[in-house]
Length: 288
Image 1 (spheres, rainbow, N blue to C red):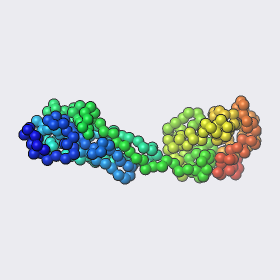
Image 2 (image 1 turned 180 degrees about the vertical axis):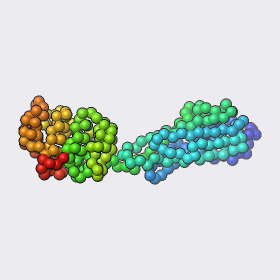
Image 3 (image 1 turned 45 degrees about the vertical axis):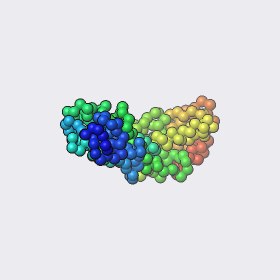
Image 4 (image 1 turned 120 degrees about the vertical axis):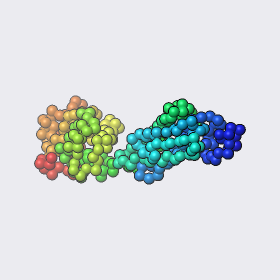
């Protein structure tokens, strides 16, 4: 660099300092291509930080990421001697086991110095633009969500290779009653020991699909046991009774569980319907 300002004359610079406006103080952050892109369990990314001019005292940059990324280092230090030398920050995605799809995280920066030109959150220039101290990180997920069951929708809600009243049936009832999170799974109590679909998030997403508005209108949604185009707790109770092995009038509690305008009005009709979603048909009323 050649400048009439002796503080900048003959300083070796790269892409990051080339983005600076001449003679303007500030913390310069360069992403290289104006984005930070990382992949869970694989590729990370980097960006560089430097100062536009020499500070009058030491400058510390604290770097704070969200809960989806990690960065190294978490702190950078600049002095009047090294202010123009870019320092790299390496960013990696947290490799979790949750299927989230493409998502983002934020990395914030805070400058601390006795030099007021390099102190605070409003002294940053990101890719030449002022006004923010935060970088957005684009994250590619490496989780595909829960694997598909033998057919798209079945009564094996937790995907443990069985259909049971105390697990699958209770999960359906809790879902229809509006429970979510730990309440949906009973803190894991209602999830089978060998379940593949074990998190509340995955189970709720699966049952959301099982609701299927188009099939509900047609009376074919798995959760609409009586076919009246309404999913309600009595449907879930009927499903749970089916998984207990009850049949006929016992399945419908002598008709008490059948809703108004139902198209499946007998235990036999409901049993035939639910068998279509049961990869492990009832062997006896002892299956719980």
